[in-house]
Image (cartoon, helix red, strand yellow):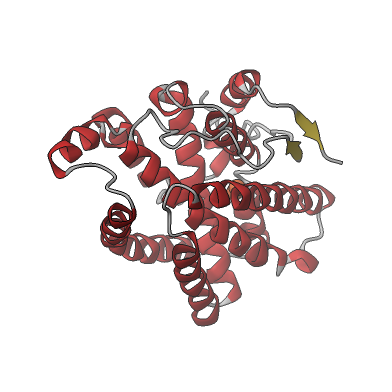
Length: 284
Ligand SMILES: [Fe+2]
Ligand SMILES: [Fe+2]
């Protein structure tokens, strides 16, 4: 839905939920589309994002005392509440991934090192700009999950419900870090320079993934080389539709007047919530 020139951005209620996933005892080995490679890439993402969300909480919380608007103070509390729940449940999900040969500790340790290094080298405002950019990317992934059904309909429960719940809450709180950044005087140049820096850092990701895949294959021969091409072709993130969507979404971030609520996510949130089968207890 396009906003008119004087229209307020749509406000979305942020709700902290306590889902009942248990310890993911029933998680099947190839929970994403029965495809070992899709399962592998999303498993790695789960491990990285667990540490990333701790970073998001720290970089937003550091400005808590400088926020004076009651609405933003409330939203920051809800943002922290949601991200803390995500971290908790991702830890349980990652523990289940250990059963399938994921080297969780090593990936976690390396991600933690990168995040700590960023905090050490950057100013507090620039570190917050990292969170703002990464929150834009998590929102993009959540929207992709909604718009391209292969990302959700072909996934086994409870993984499908788990990612849908996380996606819904990312859409709900997508503006919070950005609003805090603007509130404390964060500017356009820092925001886009940090985005370029992060995109540069992501260039190492394919090598990390290849390394992790080789080690993963050593523990358990995951996919014979002859079928790897087929698995790659079946990966929903490597299709032209989602790639086009990613690029459009990414470039929108570089507009000087960009705001996360430029895209109205309310319809996605409602549709996704209606698909989730596990009970979602409201918290508190
Ligand atoms: Fe999250
Ligand atoms: Fe988030």
